[in-house]
Image 1: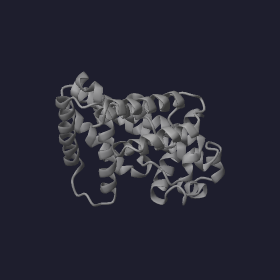
Image 2: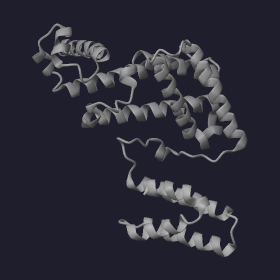
Image 3: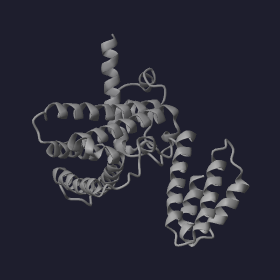
Length: 294
């Protein structure tokens, strides 16, 4: 009995995936999915409470299949050179994302992003993808990229997102195998530049997972502001001003740090401190960024 129920569930998921791909989320009804399955709508509601629950299950299933296929690809590549293995992994994901673009997009404009169950599934997917991408580059380059791993992952994901969008819009004629090679060559240049120049990392693990529907926690936000003020302070030391003028500016940075450590900072004081810093032309871009952060 349970086996039959599971078969029925998989049939619904498979059919719903095809219907959602064809018509989109908003334009698809449970009746249309039931009709496509050749069953009564009530039969679907016995397994999935709502369209949101069904869509979330399809979303999870789509990515479950992707990760299972990725693991199988790994299993078959034991004797493959690291960079070729990276190319094959990137090719696999590009192809999968291209074929399942609707379910691998960000869903920014759909009401489903406000559904609690979907948000949990989305966060889990994003965390799993970030971890996978991190592991892909670690496997290719080893521990020497540890300091820059999250910058490397962020750059790769940005490139990947843009090119997949172009491919989906049918303005790229390049086969995914060649596009994957293009990615590997570009990322290799970036990685070696970071290593040879010992660039200062921008991202770390705690802020690599930031997203607008998954706000950064207050503790991490304060850490980020503190790190930014450290950069602000370093910029002040570079200014062509007298030592006393630089010292005065550094004291204001110190006061800012103290105020921002409070549970509820005094907005009037923050305004006074930032207004004073803004009188220095070279510091204005830093002040504008600080406004956005606080």
